[in-house]
Amino acid sequence: MSEGTPRPLPPLLCPRLTIFLGREDEALATLSRLRRVGESDPKVKLELLDIKATCIFEKEVIGAKFPGITSRFVLVTKQCRELFVVRHLNRRLLIACLLQIIQQFTGINALIVRIICLIISSQAIVGNANSLIYQYYAPKIFQAIGLKGNSVDLLATGVVGVINFFSTIPAIMLLDRWGRRKVLIIGVIGMGVSHMRVGTLFAVYQNKWETNRTAGWAAAVFIWIFISNFAFSIGMPT
View 1 (cartoon, rainbow, N blue to C red):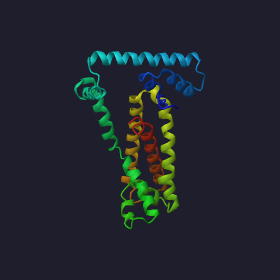
View 2 (tube, helix red, strand yellow):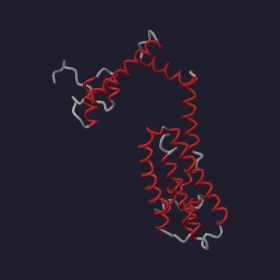
View 3 (cartoon, one colour):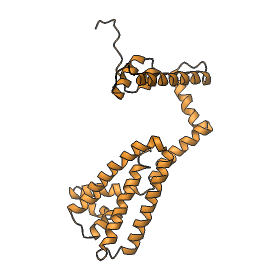
View 4 (cartoon, helix red, strand yellow):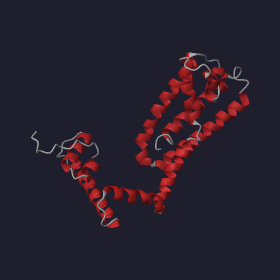
C-alpha cells in the first residue's frame, strides 16, 4: 500500500453502527455473515434498508433537536443531559438504576459469596475461611442433611453453576417475545416463593435436619429454584 493511499477502516460487527458511519457496503457484508445468506438475499437487503431508514430518521431528529452543533463531544454531552432533564427518559434511567439496586437485595450474593468461600476453604488459602462458610443457609442445609466434603462442594458450586447457566437460555429466547416486564415479574414471583419456602423450612427444622432429611432436600431444591428464577429474570435483563 502506497504512502498516499488511505488505509481501510477496521470492520465493525454492528451493521447499524457501520451504516451510521456511512459504510453501507460493510454493513451489508456483516448482515450477510450474521444471517448466513448471500448479500443478494432479499431479506438481507430489506433489513439493510430498514436499518438505513432508522439511521436517517435519527440523524434528522438529532439535527432538528440540536441545530448548529457540529462537535461530537458537545452533541453527546447534550444527549446525556437529556437523560436527567427529560421526564420520560429520567424515569427509564431511574428504573434501570433501581433494578441494579434491587438485584443486590434478592439474596443472591449470599449464595455466590458462599461458593467463593468454599473454594477458598478447599484450597486452604485463608485460615479463618470456615468462619465465613457458615454465614449462609444453603451450605448449612447441605451439610446438615448428611452431606460432607466433595458432596457439599458439588451441590453448592457445580449444581448452582449448571442451573445458573441453563436458566439463562429461556430468557434469551423469550425476552424479546415476552418483554422484560413479564420476565421480571415471573422471576420475582418464583424467587419470592422460594425464599418463603426456604425460610419456613429453615425456621422449623434448623435444629432437626438430621432427623428430617426430606425437609432438608426440599430446602435445597427451593434454593436451586431460587437460583434458576434469578438467572432467568433479574439476573439476565439487568
